[in-house]
Image 1 (cartoon, protein in one colour):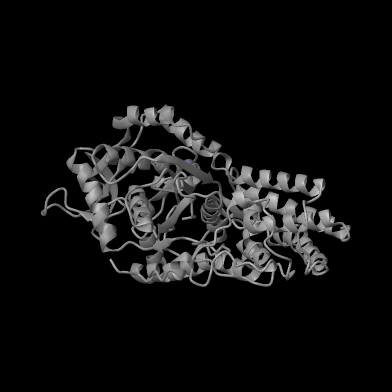
Image 2: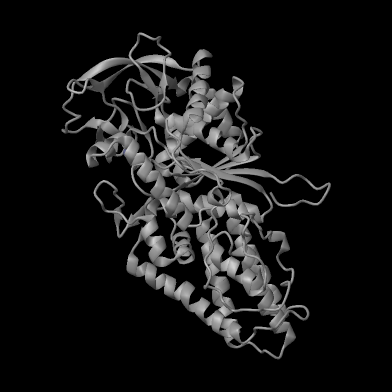
Length: 549
Ligand SMILES: [Zn+2]
């Protein structure tokens, strides 16, 4: 938390999280360009705006996708989770995703989740309902969620039971249009499960949206509008399967049921962000980054669980809640498909492009409100023209200015340029219209202007020298959320410590320091030489090892 002047307002507490990734493989470029990098840039930009930020999430171990993937590749689910957790942790670190916490569910987490849902069940929040699920006689097991595929009854895309990844809308357990596959051939058997009947809570949900002054991106707004138009669905809270957190609400003799992993995600956010803060005081604002496929659960199920939890005395607060969705990132026109091996892994791209260059490119092309596409040759051209060329020009020209320092006010030209760039970055970092594309575009223009102006700089004019050094110095703060290594290198060029000191403490450059003059002469022009790791989890020695379920 940044130091505050005595007597000043306490820093605004902002919690930032992204959808817990399913540990059935490493993060791919779509994850990174979407919720992962967006949330990191958000957490960092909130820090430079002076907020007290907690940023964390976990793996999503209880999704049935873990079991289906493990079966397909012939390993145990536990082996798959451990491998994926190690790969993801490595990718987050490579990408400079400065999470305070990235862990996996453990026994304490399970207790918290079970207790949360059991309390709501005791209060009568859930309804028992008979549904028909495919039953595999050979395995002696019901099949649900990832095991069940078909065509979405809303948009006709290929979908799995629970939610359609294409349109983001919910489908009831038996609503998919069945297709002829192994599961489609299974007989359906009736079984009683516990459900959250959202229609029961319609008034509460509608009142929340009427009161809310938080704008949604258009795709999420559509999910809310279209879902509210019809009877709200009921959501399975339990399934008669053995993967997940077991509950015994039907007594010790009844067949075991486990908590549906989708609603579990909300309770997981509460748990992990409390862990990240080491208190349960919550926050002033919660910012969640999700793919549109999580839109329905986020907009309806998490919301209802938070309202019910608050009503029934559970340790949840109801902060201002902002959900920032993203659309799909396509790989040369195709959807990333882990199962078909048609994928570009986040770690591979980060290693080949370098952290800052990868972050800049992915921010610039992030699928914020519509699908975006990654094409390797286009990405390379974009990086060459918008990042490499200006930075090379700047480094060469700055070499002539080593030893120079600010000796008076910047010229009018530079003052106006500084004001304009700060306003652009501020607009991109403002949560009301947060945009990583906007931040990357602001950075590209800042670099372009700096490179062009340096080419014709009058080095005998002190106001020009003051201007160029101050303009460069502002990047230490403005660029830190998008390209942390570049920002750290700017700090080093003026003999200042980088964004994280060797003890792992943040040296967060605050935006309200912008315009202050650089603290000393330019002592180096190396803008790209150093890369630093900015991973809090490692810096603070927090264990990332699997803790076992
Ligand atoms: Zn659909």
